[in-house]
Amino acid sequence: MIDRLAGIVERISSLYFPMSAEAKRKLASILIRTDVKKNALFKAPGEVCDQICFVHKGMVRQFYYKNNKDLTEHFAYENAFFFCIESFFRSVPSEILVEALEPTVVYGIPHDPLLELVDQDLEIDRFYRSLLERSLIISQRKMDMVRFESANERYARLLKEDPEIIKRAPLAYIASYLLMTPETLSRVRAGEGRRGQEKKEVIEQDINKEE
Image (tube, rainbow, N blue to C red; front, side):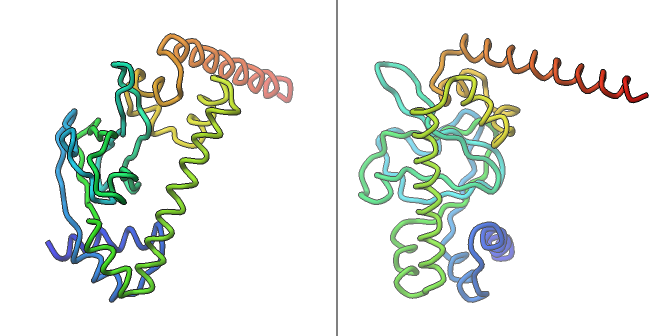
């Protein structure tokens, strides 16, 4: 178990912020593993989400309800973090729910032990700040996408930057995440497919001309 936790922290350190062996040992000592079955919730509605979570295996989505509609806010899969910001900082029940789209293994960094380590260790403090910065940037980019991009542009961006979501998440959730109806998403995907086929045909024509 200790070796497994050390391996998780080693991966986190290599991906997000390099830490010394001592800092990694401290961080590994507070990790909490949670196994979430497909379609199950990470936390029950009304519970406090007091962990910053690292996805070791699987995929989750964060979502909420508005006017009786299920709206997807965010996806996370292997090697990504997720957390419910207000619930984590203020210890209040989260209105954002987390659902496993696949059998998922999550390693959580709990709030109070983390802040104790932040006060003790400069490297862990910097690691913590780097996670918060990444979260703010992701939120900003999502808002910019909504404000400035068309439906076609939003889908093209997701296809380029996060193709795993396209491959693994149900289309209804992808449509919700991109703030469009499933019907609009189907039209956008059909248009993207036609453009891809046209591009392929142009390339083949160019090759034939060269021959």
